Length: 278
Ligand code: C2E
Ligand code: CA
Ligand code: CA
Ligand code: CA
Image 1 (cartoon, protein in one colour):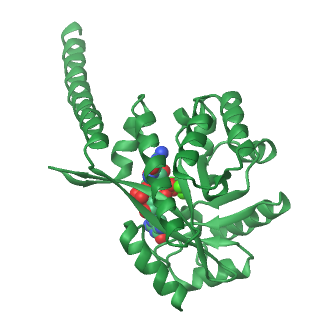
Image 2: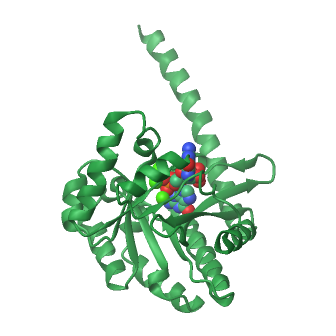
């Protein structure tokens, strides 16, 4: 008995070691990545469904690792989120996104950027002042920065998160709840948070034309948002028929591969120019 127990324990320890070693490697490499230009932002355009115009985008983080190539955000952001590493990471994203918005402004384009923040950022009471100083540094009007937060980011410490979100609102930042409908107590957040936008999760949008349950969820979310005076961004729009259906449902904005994948700034500029020409 004792032997089996010991073996199991040993096996368990070894796998934990392998896992934590890999995690530590990723985290250490990430520290280097932030300092040595291995990170990039891709921008996914968001269009206004009524006019077809693009006046905003979402910044999505990419890591081009010197040996491993492109590492998707899902493979390193959750790790960074478990540690303090998320702070320098989010700071890098904010700085890079605002630098880009500044470039666009200098070219006569007013394009808002949405940045994803994590739970740890939302319970950091220094976060609003930090963001304000970055906006000031780049001379970007506050309303051109949008903050996307998920419901799960709010549950760690709802009181503190609410305080930080309220400060964002007081700064005039635009606030959106991301992945709406996949979280825990969506309704209570609607009541308490000073937000402007709901982003319907792409898991519902994806099959809204073929799955009646998804259609009901998308329709109800849009209705609910409008009752609260909020606007709706549908994410994950992959075809024209879905785009049309969302338009008919009075959804305000859309994002998805059908419009454009997330792309580097240079490609975004080309896409934007072509779209404006149309
Ligand atoms: P998210 O915030 O929900 O971002 C949307 C994800 O959906 C992106 O994946 C985007 O590439 C993908 N997407 C957009 N349109 C479509 C579509 O039409 N079809 C499909 N199948 N997918 C679509 P990505 O870039 O891999 O990012 C994954 C997640 O990583 C994001 O989900 C977000 O939670 C997180 N993330 C990305 N960048 C950052 C960041 O700078 N900070 C933080 N905290 N999280 C980030
Ligand atoms: Ca997002
Ligand atoms: Ca989302
Ligand atoms: Ca998501």
